[in-house]
Amino acid sequence: MPSPSTRQTQMDTFMGKTAGLDSNKIIDDIAYTMRVEAKADDYTVLASESGTVFVQTTADCDFTLPTREAGLIYWFIGSSNHELRVTSDVTQKMTAFNDAAAAYVEFTTTGEQIGSGFMVYCDDGLFWNVCTMPGLVASTMGIA
Amino acid sequence: MPIPAKRQTNSPPHMGKMPALNDDYQIDQMAFKVNTATKTADYTVLASESGTFFSTRGATGTVNFTLPAMASGLNYLFYAAAAGAMTVTSGTVDKMIADNDVAADSLAFSTGSEIMGGAIQVVCDGSKWMAMAYCEESQTTVVAT
Image: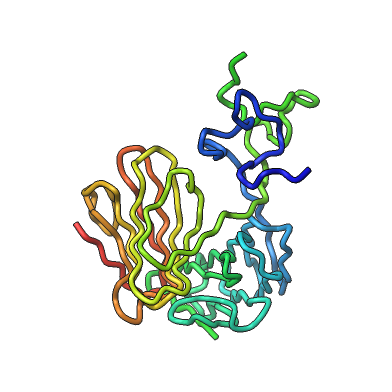
């Protein structure tokens, strides 16, 4: 039997509440660790890796996002002086700074790459929304 | 029987550990999706929507998100996916920390051509909303105090 959409677990209810959830059906005070993956090459991200922090390490990395599905979320961080690019699964389905129909975002300027990154999530309109995290105030992001 | 504060589920332990929890009682390497919603007009956010990522995709004008009554741990993200200004406003004046202001009322992306792609994440500590902006280096945030 399908679980009601307001449930976050499939446990039985106890005194009218679902186990581990508060009265708003929210997991209260959640404590968790994030999955972290180091990459030194181009990589196609999987939907099953939603919630992962990808770290670009010793080489240029072009991360290609999976088929869009509302709620998918990823972090991409540069840890070396190499290029970091995040590419939409489909062109023109990514929103970034002043661009409602981008294909990819990137940090490519030498000396501005370490610590720069993106948080990317898919909204319910099935667009990838890019939240920019410059490593420096002046880090320049590229968009195409 | 009361549930220990460290537990995140009520399930019985398995081999001495809580299901899906590590030795620190955390959900380890959590894989998750976020709840998403789109608003094209002013909207008062609900406490029950904590954790939601809101977008303004499709909005033709300005969108103002008003935050709910403060409670520790409530958190939201607001993404400017349209060209119109996006403002996040505390439900109570002077209760937002943002842009070097400990008693702000709101934080916004409202400068023409610097709006789309901006995002504001807020977390409440019970007495203030901490507002953090994600923006490209040339994007300007505007704080009201």
